[in-house]
Image (cartoon, rainbow, N blue to C red):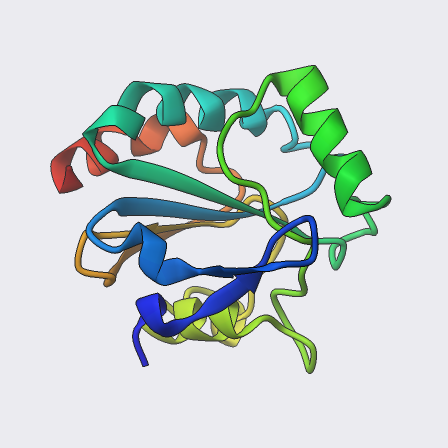
Length: 157
């Protein structure tokens, strides 16, 4: 299965086909609003603004699986992120990234780039970089700041 054959849930409950992003470089991130890494939203927004016109998209998937650090509804999370960090990149409905209810997108991403913990996501703000052909080009942990991904994104563009 290709990443472009998948659909994800938008914050309004509707479906979003990922084939809309075909031919773009993607950075897919599981986020949380109450995490020590939450300030990374600012760096993610900087990357989005810098590279969006060149075919870069950033896809934000809030996740409450780690320390219950993404409480609230999808609307509350979105309001927090736009108000505090001014995000303009797509933010989707809250998901699980591990376990029996994990989103198929994350099953796919983890199969492509396993990482530590037997492939499971370790914490909030794990980042997957996807090339224009839909291949997972890199997986980066929570501590990897968005700014450190700048050259990797530029190289794929």
